[in-house]
Image (cartoon, rainbow, N blue to C red; front, side):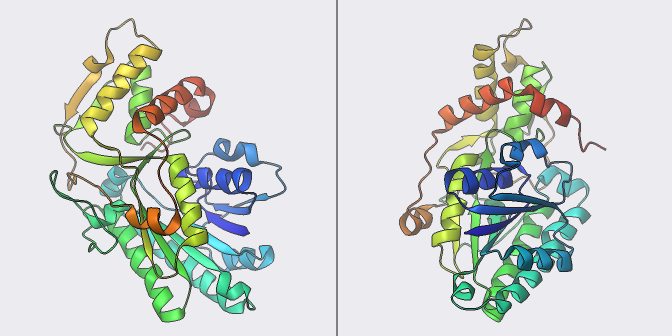
Length: 343
């Protein structure tokens, strides 16, 4: 299979590229605009591989993207290109509308025309996988259940709203134009090669450098944590086995409060890299909560497990320790990224 991956130099996108090429033997055509959060280093091991090609391109450039689809004769599209940081969406929502909504529209139009041009049986086998987030569902009470794929969308942040809009566009292109779309809603993802503005990566590096560990509100907000390698495997399963017109929740089954996550990171750092300044829990600082901060996210991944044969393999404690060790060993990758993208 030859797969066009958008945003393949981002955190989850690069994991998908590595998994498709190195583990599954597929060919990948990676399109990435290379915004502040993208990193060439996360796909450096694929450079020169006969099954990997990279194009620096904005997904909104519909004609150029369509030309690549045709010239590369791709069998599927995995759409991961997105602005994804909630705090940034609150401060500057325009980029999220442009990339996540307008860019997704342009990509859908390019894929629609390309799909219509394919002969059978390639036309029937083609898939457009729109990769989304559990944040489209909105807030779940602390003592509530878990989101199923039938749960209505109630996005709280500009980021979540832009992703929900793209979800609706993708499914409309399926129902109206017959584009074989599959959706996935992943929970909070962590692991190596994550840009150091997201919670776990930021806390690791701040703790390593003796900086404060800022926690919103009281730290009671709960997230379900999914290792990036588990997420990449799930996305490949959705692409190859998912039914067109269906959505699949991808969760790690590792619910933790934000405070619990930060305390664990502080303790593991103390063990792996002791600080002369004392326990890193002393660096934890509670800061004013962000607007519209959802209390809890939790998805029911039963559909993906039963239909696709996928199941998360990484225990959170083991995965977190491995992630911390990776950042300790890979300063050459993250050091140039510290401060990138700041106003």
